[in-house]
Length: 224
Image (tube, rainbow, N blue to C red; front, side, top):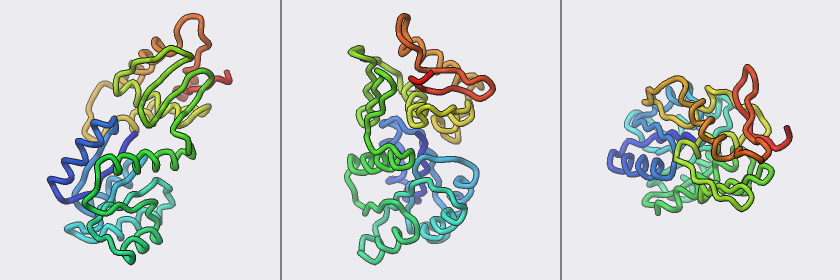
């Protein structure tokens, strides 16, 4: 899952980036409204974390501009402005959640997870595909009684597939949701991770759940 952070305070920005990356998210971070608008135009995110007091304008203007595009990506306002008027104003302009600084790291992560579930219309943190169970809160994966150990990027690919259960996902979409803006790796990286997932999930004797969709990409489904 990929997050855009728009925050100009360097110390806080670095703290949040570290927090998100340690929890398995790819994270792009910018410091101005102008750069925020650019990144929102160029990329597809799972969640946006938005400060209101930016050096070149208001985060509310970024929010209004973004919502005018019709995109429904969840936006979490993160601001020192904690009055009722501020919170109501942000939510009425299209924010999905509002968290006042200072905040507890665990609460920020919980809110981000909740917004990801909302985006993909999966209110339950547990995603099931046949006898495969993916706990998106703890990142535990099991198939039947067998626990599956996944490396961070392997899990990231699986979660994108799980969030789009029974729906083909392109290689480009997988790439864009597991890597940040600065990644410059090999073009076949996604295929490598899918191959590794198959070796761990679709073991011999079990029904295949990860399918190649010719000309498109991959799909997680128990219905094929």
